[in-house]
Amino acid sequence: MNQFVWEDGPVASPGQTKSVPAKEPTPDRLLPQCLASERGILGCMFLSPNECISECIATLKPGSDTFYDLKHQVIYKALVQMFEDKQAVDTITVMNHLKNRNQLQNAGGLEYLAPLPDMVASAANLSFYLDIVIDKYMARQILLHCMDFSEKIYNWEGEAKDMVEAFEASAMSIGNSVQGESDSAIKEIVKNRLSFYEECEIRGGGLLGLSTGYTDMDRMIDGMKPAEMIVLAARPSVGKTALAMNIAENVAIDQKIPVGVFSLEMSREALVGRMISSRSRVNERALTRGKSDDSDKKRIFVHGTKAQSQGPAHGSEAWSQAVHY
Image 1 (cartoon, rainbow, N blue to C red):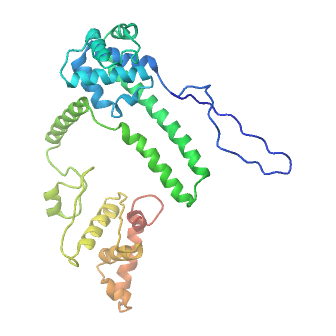
Image 2: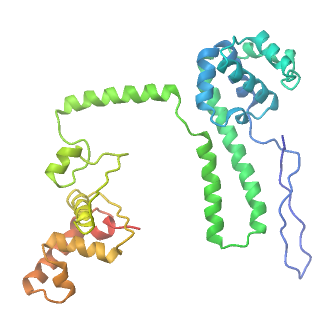
Image 3: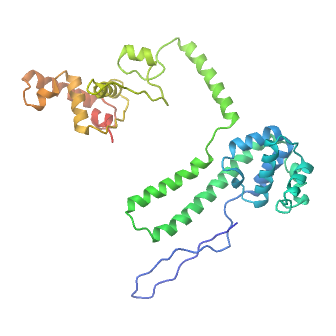
């Protein structure tokens, strides 16, 4: 396992432009790690194989690579393999498993395996050890990604924005590599859902989400709720965009809640025009063709001004809060 520290590059002589080459790592600083927590995880797996090994498999998404110490990686792989093969797990069986595969010395030998079950008093603190080890793994990955990307920067030939996007994608991959829900998370979800049902009974009905402004639609979908995607599907030119914009204005203006509208076929001005036309009940085509009368113009002014004053309170017009890209 490499260990790194940064050193300053050469200093330019007077009259020369200073060149800053990629900094070379030197073996003076360990990568982020917590060997005690790693041993704690292995100790818990020995103490309570059925519960702890299954939790580790569900939580440690990168697998054995989550561990910093190579010995711990070898032992973890052996424990998982034996668990999946439904074999008994203890110091002797694991030692025999490793010995048959010529991995015992890579795991530190019997003198390293034997004390592991005694490293922890009980398996109750497994989740704390897992959190620490995952944090250290992510810190190592961040450092290694930054080092790798720093080399790419010097040879980058594309635009700067492409470089930023590539770096963001690389950084996101770190978080994605450790995401996942364990069995305990499912239990918590079930518990929260049962509490939710009790709250619904106490509340005695009513919408669970935001009102669309359309009573029949609200009754069908029970309001717009978080983490749900509602699809409006219909033939072309039957009013899908108009309905979506009406819902957006009902939420943004009437309920004073900011709304984001993303359109791939209409500009911001066109969407806002539809909103103004809907609020004032004036045909927008008449406005764009200059055929509106004084009554239409008055309604446009009144409802446009009202939309500005009644929209979400962020110091902007209501439709600028409702329409974003």
